[in-house]
Length: 342
Image (tube, rainbow, N blue to C red; front, side, top):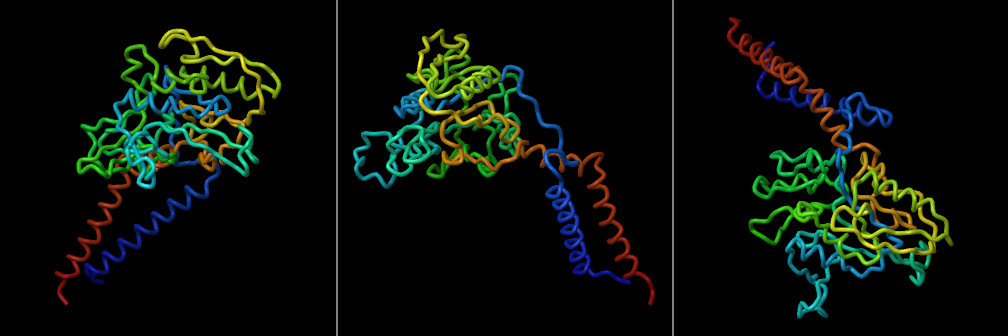
């Protein structure tokens, strides 16, 4: 039987679609957390550093935003819907962007009269890169412009290596990397935890200027322990809240302060388990889904699946060899049929 090129392509497409559907069915139907195609999650970097943001301590002064701009030489940002600011007297970003690497957002409900209350209250949330333990942006980058430091775990971006494909933008479940669409030679921008300041034993700008310790710097295991201490506190109790570096090693020791716990913390520590964990953590008295953070994400990093599937398909080059063998077989059979005498 002869096989035309049209029929061959049809069969190849159908076969590929069937194989892809089978693979997707296998992945989607597998119980969490184990999946036969998943690779092992990457461990926390040995000297992982990050931030602990405590929404109950934040007063919304936005000093962290100003310090971030100054530390990273980022330009002023004024939204197009802010005619009252046409003199550009104020820097007024409302979301992360190519000009803003750190932003304080506000949750409000009802009459918004009570701080840290879900009903008829308000609360603040700091948004910046969470520096995932197993980051999707690093996994999808085809040219290794996104990298994760093997020691500190800081996720960085190299604009000289970047080709502007924006895979990192699409892959981040937190919407952090931003591309500068207003520049003909636009680049990716994201928080890099002020690594240039850390190299000089200085605190990241946001943690350096926070007057209440709402943004605290330190090693991630120490920050997680501090987060668990805070979420176990009861309303009415007094607690000590450190400032700057939790251990006082970076940027010098800072005086902390005593404060009465006014509202019960949520037991949920954001970043402890989300997508395999992040090096920047948050605690709050208001549920994180109300603060517009994604809470429907798995407890494993997406790269454990995507890279696991790739490694399975390409292990020993068995998959590509099978596809090549099929192509050669069909090509040979088609050629043979054409040359056979009638």
